[in-house]
View 1 (spheres, rainbow, N blue to C red):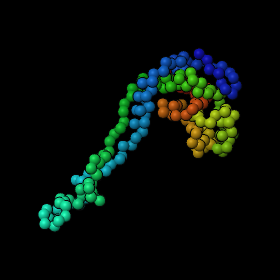
View 2 (spheres, rainbow, N blue to C red):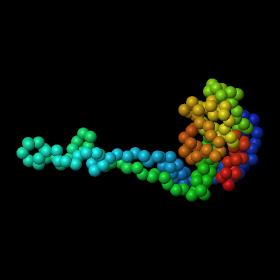
View 3 (tube, rainbow, N blue to C red):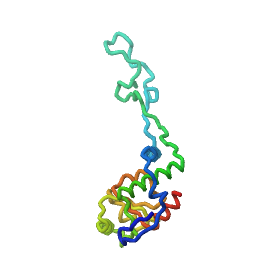
View 4 (cartoon, one colour):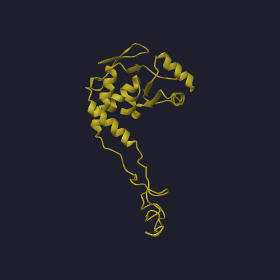
Length: 201
């Protein structure tokens, strides 16, 4: 199987197992959900009526005052009271087998290639760490929204791209299912393809 580079029109031989893999929608969905859940901190926590400080004494007599009966000033109905169904810290992490994760990445990369959303370039370098240089590089490739995958991200490329919403840059080890699907196009260098093939074998 061969891919053509956009900047030089050269042909690059690639593995059919990585770039011609059958798309598995269910597996891709599972991989994305697992990735997003594993990114959650799960630190949200509130206090119930038993955990809020104070409220141990009955505020007034049960009868005779004319006011509504009350047993504690920390009732969820009261201001500064506890929360009725308080959220607690929890672990959202899920397990996904390595083989399943690799197959999901293969599915996504192959689908990107089939839909012509995978752009192969011989190399990707910015002349400086200025954002305008990065944007001009993207304009040369006719891209408005893309993830750039490199074998190793240089400091200039990182600094030039970090302030842009529509673009992101990562090395091969940082490739994940969510970011591959989040952008319209995925730009990948020849060196990154070789590393990616080794990683997904």
